[in-house]
Length: 90
Picture: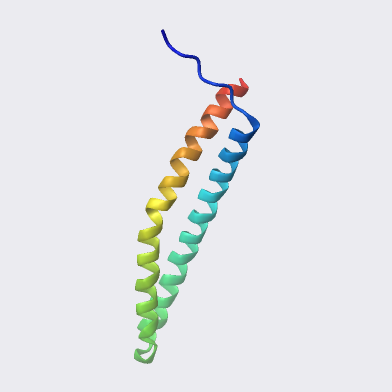
């Protein structure tokens, strides 16, 4: 005997939307950090007096690497929740 899935509530839809937008924001921040790190590397390569920009790029890469599990922790449940909401609306 298979149990029927519970009804999707307004609170569940709200949480799905919050997770989705959180994943979008984290992904956007990671994309901006990647672009800024490339800019920092270009500046560090142009002049040896700007070598500190290379270290800042490394710090950003560590932040991006640390953000990947956070992005996955937000995006995977958000996608599953959104799919359940869409299936319930049919």
